[in-house]
Structure formats: C-alpha cells, structure tokens
Image (cartoon, rainbow, N blue to C red; front, side, top):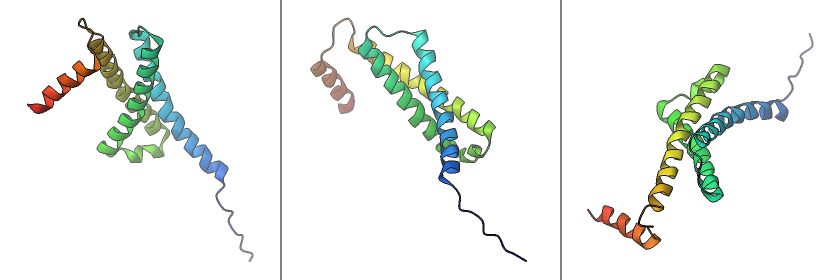
Length: 128
C-alpha cells in the first residue's frame, strides 16, 4: 500500500479567501458612502473628500467593532454571513457621514466660528 503525501496549502487559495472577505467589507462600506452622498451633496470638493474618507473609515472600523462586540465572528464561515457583514458595515458608515456633515454645518455656522472659538467651546464643555 502506497501512502500519498498531501500537498501544502497554496497561497493562491488563501489569497482567494482573504479577497472574498475583503470584498464583503468593501461592498458595505462603499454602498454606505454612495447612498449618503446621493442624499446630501457637500458644498465643496474638500468637504466631499473628507466626508468620503470618514464614511469609509467609520464603516470599516465601526462595522468591525460591532461584529467583535456582538461576537458574530462565526458568521464569516458562510456566504450568507459575509453578506450580513456587508449590511453591518453599511449601517456603521451612516452615522459617520452624519457626524462629519454636522461638524461642517456647525463649523460654518452663522457666526463663522474660528478655530480658537471652537477650542474655547470644547474646553468649556470639559470644564463642567
């Protein structure tokens, strides 16, 4: 009887698994950014870029935090679980957009708040 040695796992197979999970994360994050940008367009291109970056980071980091906090890591073993993760990432990106847009609206308020005025307000809040 002849014994056959098993081959080592290939890096291509591992890369395929990693790319599948990365795709699941990026789909939710990108959809969150597209939806909120279609709803409320920023006034300047700088504001748009900042809001886009913050939405994507909020989506990825916030989604990962929610998945860890709720203990949903086992869902990563199934295709349905990865699709559900895309929904988690999508949902986590929406508050980031709202916070960034709110900050821009507040900074560009009627009194034209300057950086020293903003820092003064923040210090007031922390002194209470």
